[in-house]
Image (cartoon, rainbow, N blue to C red; front, side):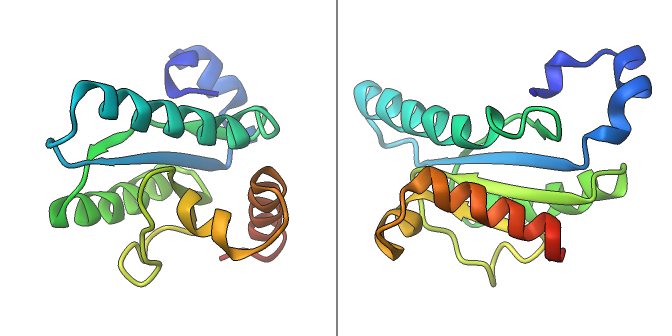
Length: 141
């Protein structure tokens, strides 16, 4: 579910079921043309669907970090730390457009980057995403 699907009452009643926060990272540089920006956002949306739909009752998607750069990595780490401090057990950073490094986004419990998932194996991306999330939930970080 998206963060905006909750009001105070529903969050207080059902929030304990949602232990995983997803933070999308688009990685725009500001140099993209409008059609390139649309393509990047559509890739991000489609990749996010692979998490939101099958895990609808357990994950909450927060607003995306749209622009990339050194500051955005620090922002991602801070966001992961903060969402865990308010009760989420896991923070997942998801990027359809940029391969991020785990050692840089170290506060994330799971880093899912489409460029890396596409090239790593013959398994479908949706299977890999599902497997990685389930492994996180079974084993912790």
